Image (cartoon, rainbow, N blue to C red):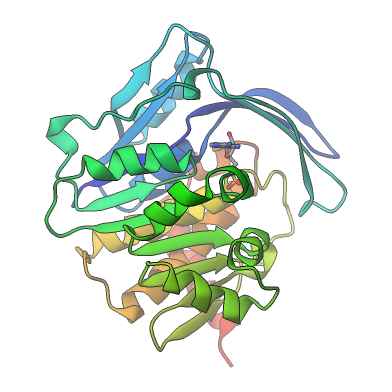
Length: 303
Ligand code: AMP
């Protein structure tokens, strides 16, 4: 069942305590689409890049099964994000965000993919998320969205509109506390559900994720990583992995058990993203790698 992923497609410059890499493939939609394509097909990416976007990134995405028919090419410069991780890799400083092509972007969903039953509103302006969802035509669909502190601060009204139209919100811990107005994460999950989505996932970074349903709750850990190189895109990978699994199960109206499994798969796929810069480790993950890490994860999570 086909998946539509809209969001940023970026050039990232990332510095960590051990390395400094420039011109990397980044962007919420790049990670989410690549992760989804590990589990399901077809995956259609909607985004916009500029004249300076490296051709090698396009080749890599296409070579990994991501359809780029909905990727616009502009004569402006690409969206570029520059950030730095410190000794504690959970802390990130954003040095520069060059909006460029995203400033006046209007999402256009090609007719051929508008009826996709799985829709990912990866991190982008809530206005773009609304444009995307308004062009989706499937009568039965499952819509998942991500957001960030910037939009909670400057586009809250539009974000509230998005919340009323989605089935699942995936949000990180700090942003969940900020958006829900409480430090208690259980209360935050419940309050975010009241804004519209039937399900909410709160991501806890190296500690896993919390999944909230109506009267159901699930806590998933994270794969214990020794070789953490660059956590950029882990959240987007998580999102894409979840939707890829649901699409592979044809689960347009997923059960809580299917959502639990989707959270585990999202969490495991995200661990690969953290093992190298950009999408490098994710690109080479095979279904055999994923299966064996899943089995080990099951063993270490039981008691
Ligand atoms: P994550 O580590 O999951 O928060 O995602 C990082 C990715 O989000 C990077 O590859 C950035 O290019 C992208 N990103 C950063 N800021 C924004 C923004 N304001 N809008 C859309 N994407 C962004």
